[in-house]
Image 1 (cartoon, rainbow, N blue to C red):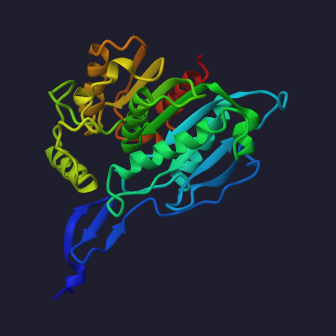
Image 2 (image 1 turned 30 degrees about the vertical axis):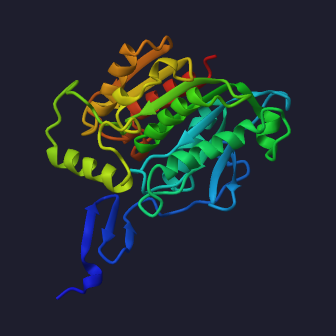
Length: 318
């Protein structure tokens, strides 16, 4: 007979398992790779920075190989990782590799945010942590911040945010918060949402047959954000957001994958933003025959390569 310590309260494999005794088992995203100065394959350098010592909120910074003048100012990418709000970090092989490769292709500086993860730190903590990083970035816009890579190499008039899955949800919410509380010195030009985690208020797009996955996703949101008001919560439902019309960026690209069980959420986001009165440029990029965050797990896939090229171009458009 199994021990009471083995009794499972909540099972969301392959992400996380929560036991009745309070123990939390992360089933993926636990490996960490070190930062590197001048990666021999890409020339991209990376380093880790503690931003809020009291909480451990930090980031991995990426700098491409600079072949022109040292005074050259590059666009800034703020990247927010996915993982259901509960797994992965910027330091994992998956995200370190992907963000580094995007930095290499786009020739941008990147700040990959390490927020505190649920359920130990329930939402909205991840949103507040991400906002603290944005405020820290803004403190460099006068070229007198604590981090030389930002002071010396970033064009603060060309700032974009991107994320995948739960990270795309956070990126959107950061753009909304920047609408309500502008960050002096930062000009947001782009928002890239890849396979974003949103609730659809009404059926749009193809029907999703994987009802078990959808039910587990609904339960995941309630476990990660126990204070939620439900699916009318603007954190998860774009239709409940009152500030979409003034979204703090000029362009938005929404990437979806045909076989993603969560595809209806980002399709609904695209439709809702389209009808909101927001006057920026909105693009929908769909990959047929692919699943959720396929580009992370199979980055040499032809469609993953094409997506990265499109996102790199997006980051370099004023």
